[in-house]
Image (cartoon, rainbow, N blue to C red):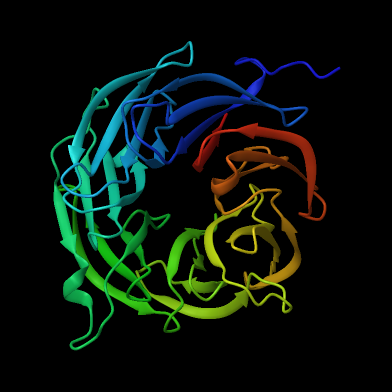
Length: 355
């Protein structure tokens, strides 16, 4: 008999879903460490389309973008109570439509936001009580488009390098990784350069490996993952581009999310359309990828997924089938095994698992 997970014996999971804030859109769950089973702990309404979130290391504050059009587009702060409930703190406007990503650097007291349709990025100070301060910096990517180009900027991800000197933005519309140098005293970004990817690639999400010398980018529009070498000084070099799809697939597909296993040996990427997860081994010699398998998520349009801190479980948010499905990860091969566990959430689009 499988016992239902409790707050004390499971991983904490935060889920965001598309829809009106008149209903519950932010949910806190518990993932049982031994079975992969999910259980709801608490939820909150009052925020439209909470599509991405960042959590402070102490797990006491959650920062969430409301993926809406202007003028309601905003970044929200919540306190997390010991009983699992949420307490609203404040919000700030993002000054750009459809904010879709937020990253948090608590040691720098800095929050970074990407506005997808607005074509812009913004930086905010994090105040001592956890509230969000007034916007400290703002950059419009429309000025980066080539003269006469029909490309429109669509920043979709914004992260800092491990050295916390440079900020990298995956701009899906410009097919670029735009680089800024951080001025930490003023929470300001100074344009440093950028790296162009293949035309039509559509870079969406990116992440660094633990060593900080490789950057992985999943490309929404041409269904590939790009591997880049990083020199630690804001410069990137493309090493590899590898498909996320089987050769036999001929339908429409839009890549979404990617994550490395906690030990850095495997990388996972999601396909919306093919409705699958691509699994790769990370080559220890140079960080390039070798495909292991492509496996169905058991639902439709997996926009986001997450790995447990121990590398044992993967949760896939299937937006169009209203489910979060659980997979067990084989530590020796990186392969995924579906479980019988499927948790119902209306239009889930974001997941974060924490200890």
